[in-house]
Length: 273
Image (tube, rainbow, N blue to C red):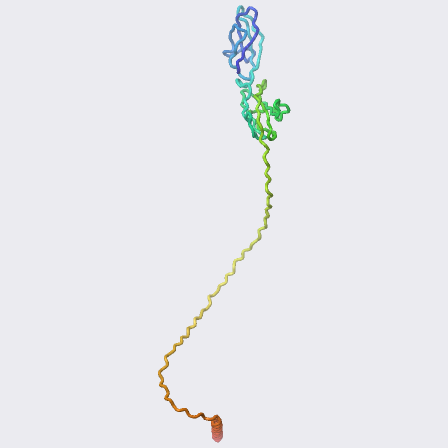
C-alpha cells in the first residue's frame, strides 16, 4: 500500500494522543504496530492489507486521559503498491493485432474479478467490449468473443474488483488491428470422374501339348564319277554304202511270213497228237 496517514482535529489543550487501528471494530486484538502515542494530529500507518476495511479511534492522554473517540473506518484499495492492473497484451501501440485478440493484464491481490472496456473511441463511448458488473471477468486474461474491424485503432483499460471495492482503472492501452487479407482466387477445380472398375474374369489358359515333329533326314546322294576305263580306239574302217529302205521293208515282210508259217506248222503238229 502507499503510505496511509490518520488525520484528525486537535483537542483544545491536548498535548499527547493515543491511537488504535484494527480490522475488527471491537479492537479486541490490536496487531502489533497498529497502536501508539503521538503528539501530532496525524500519524503514518504501517503496511496495510489490500481490499480490507480498517477501524480506528483516538483519545487524549495528556494533560488528562479522555474517553475513546467515535470509531471511524476506511477500506484499502486493491493491489497493494500496484493500485491498478498493468496492461500486458496487446502491447501499447501494437499493430497487426488479430481481429479477435487475447487481452491480458497483471493480476491484483485480493481481486475477485476484473472489468474490461474496449472501444474505438478514446473516451470509451459506445464500447465494443463492456465486461463490467455481473459480466466482469474471473481472471486476468480474456479471449475476445467479438470480431473487431480490420485496420482499426482500439483503446482498452481494466480495473480489479472485489466484493466491497475496486481498484483504479489501468492506464489506457491502444492497438491497431491487422489489415484485411487479400483474397486470391483459386483456379477452378477439375471435376474428378471415377469410372466403374470392370469385372475381369481370369480364365486359365488351355495347355496344348505339342509333340515335336518327326524329322527325317535323307541321306544325301553322293555321285562319284569313276574314271572311264581305258578302251582302245577302234581301228578305222572303211564305210560301206548305205542300204536302201525298200530292202529293209522286204526283209521284214519275209521274216513275218516265215514266223507265221512256223506257228501254223506248230499248231497242226500239236493237234495231230
